[in-house]
Length: 559
Image (cartoon, rainbow, N blue to C red; front, side, top):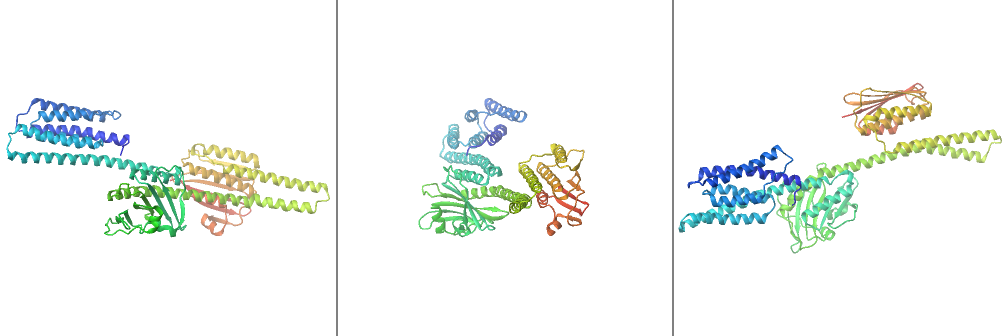
């Protein structure tokens, strides 16, 4: 697996630090364990190598933007020269194990195996040349060779695991980053499944999610060469057997191996292996024509909600292993929370759209449509019994024309308010003042606006909703309250922002002070303002005094 720059630089810095440490350990081993006379040139070589390693560490610490990389050829040259110069095998082993680790972290397994073989032969040859031949020495050479091979391969395994771990972390970050709300649900899932299919080198990926509330099964399928963007299949729950594969608490792999095949798996909650894994049903094999597959469970709200399946329909493909299944389980656990968030955000957006449509529908039904119906009735009356007096007819037509004009302005206002609105704390005061000034001039209504002098510190979404509530409240006062004067106050404290709209109009049909819950129970109050307030976690209080006006108080938490 190829690493991104960040992971690659991390490994290179680990190697740079290890070089200095190992050079120091090799120097100590040379001075402490060598029984034969030590050549000064071997000490000088190690000191120079140690100095080179320390310069690399120092440069990376002091100048983080510098990418100091000592070529691996330098390490190999030092290793070969030291094998010739040193009398201490222990000192050589330190450098040997470091070089094997450095090769493994670069993903060069062939060079690593070659180095282990050459180093083993070199150590045996070096010892054989220095010692006189005796048959008893053969066992010493064999033990020395086996120790070199085992330690070299073990260190190579550690380096490869470190590289693999970073690669998997990189893959998890990449695949979870694909599940983003702004991409759209279908596109997010398609890209994530596509990455899974490529990572496991299989022919098809499938995500099946069960929705018990809707009693439906949503299925996404992706093939590696597929370019067409397709939405999910929506299936009845009776088709669950073909996609959810037996119990959702089982993680399993399956391989066609004569008859109904064979499999492996375990309880995903406890990790307890099953001696006999449930065989694939005919529905599964007919749906996917599978020769092998992996199945892992994806969770939503802490409960199993569906399956991620990886399928091969070609028996010539590489077989899935238990390691593949454990890796798939880990990926699916990482995918669960961001996928659940995308589902929730999509659901919230759908509800918000439905709520806004309901509000627009109510406004049209209660306002413009009722007026149009009244106009239709009046026109029908005029057509059947036109006034004999031309003056009376002119007055009737003038009234109808005025009504049409008012409703045209109302419809224009509604269309304007439905456009996307960008409001933030910085321009909130200016927008409210500008709207109040325009409202005064257009509707002959006295509007007094009081906003705290200190700067508002309110999230943009709350600013947008406050402005919409403020604008809608003034229109309601003009349309229903028949007021001559209205006072608007906007204030903020450490925990909430407060909007008060106080008018001297007719008031509502009830008397007293009611919270939004009581208004809902009594089916009173402005519906759209209540919904907007509730949508940002706020509270609404309405105080009415029939014939003397009403006061609307909105409190919205800012945290």
